[in-house]
Length: 309
Image: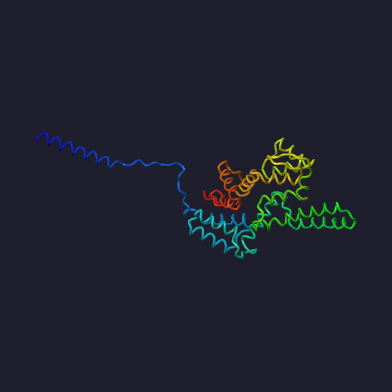
C-alpha cells in the first residue's frame, strides 16, 4: 500500500507539471522593420496629391475634376493596394480610350516621353523648330542642285534626314518599331545636338554625360576621338568603328546606356539616384524585357513616390 501511494503521488505531480507547462505564456518574436503598411489612415488629400502627381509626370497636365474623383475612389476602394496603383499607372500609359486634351492617355504619354527625351538631350527643341531648320537646309539644298553642286546637295540632304529621323522616332517608338536606344541615337546625331555641343571634344564628353551620367576615361575619350574627329579605325567597348555614326551606335548598344535610362528615371521621378539594389533589379528586368514603361511603373507605385510613408 505505501508503494501504491507513492506511485500515485508521483503520477499526480507529473500531471501538475504538464499542466503548468501547457499554460506557460508563449514568447512573441518581434521582427524589426516588418510593420505592415496601414493605408486606411491615409488622408484623401494625400491620395489626391498622388493622382495629381501621376497625371503631371505621365500626361503633362493635372487631372480634371471628374478624373480626380474616379481615380481617387478607385484607389480608396482597393485600399491603395500596389495592384490598384499599377492598374491606374498602366491606364495612364496605355489606355486608348479618348481622354481630355487628346485622343487618348496613350497618345499623350508617348508624346510626353518623346518631349522629355528632347529636354534631356537637345534642350527641349520643339518639333516646329526642327522643321524650321529643315526648311532652311532644304532651301540650301535646292540652291546647290541649281548650281550643280552635288557634294553640297548630298550633304544638306543628309542633314535633313537626321532631323527627319528625330521627328519620326516618336511614332516609331510608339508603334514598337524603335526602342529608346534608337530614339536617343537620333537625338544625339543631328545638327541641333552638334550646335549645343560644338567640336568633337565637347560632343564626346556630352554623349557620355547625357547617356551614362559620367564622363569618359582618358582611354575611352582617346578611342572615341579617333573615330569622331579623325575618322580612323578605333575600338571602344570591344567594338570597332571608323566615324561618328559608328561611335554613336556603339555608345547606345552598351548596358551602361540602359543603366543611364534607369538613373534618369529615378532622377526625374524621385529626384535621387537609384541605390545598388534598385539599379541591379531594374537592370535585370530591362535587359530581359526591354520594357522601360515597367521600370517607370515600379517607381511610380512606391510609397516613396506617393508620399504615403
